[in-house]
Image 1 (cartoon, rainbow, N blue to C red):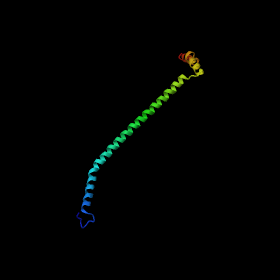
Image 2: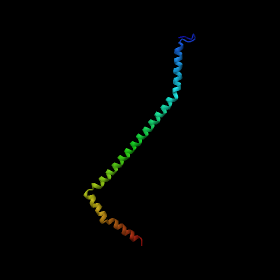
Image 3: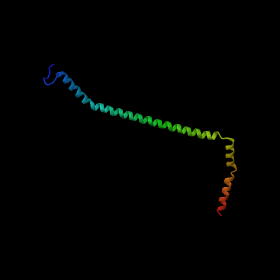
Image 4: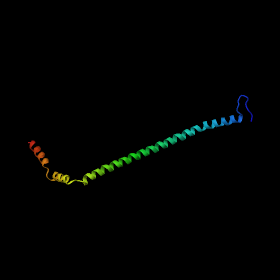
Length: 106
């Protein structure tokens, strides 16, 4: 274990520090590549989660709209049913509008 007179550290310690520095410099591209790959995987995962959340929200919205439409159709009150029957069978207002249109053509 020889020591350099200009340095207070022994030669074997200085050599081990130099080897560790060279090793960390040599490993840096691999670590950066791994970090970039991990970021890519994370971003892909987040994009898939976002797409799934949007799809689920659209399904919930479609389910709500369908349920509201079915509820409107199936829960007609007697007054609504009578009004619809009147519109289908004897619509006086529509007949009057048709008569005015026919009269205005001459």
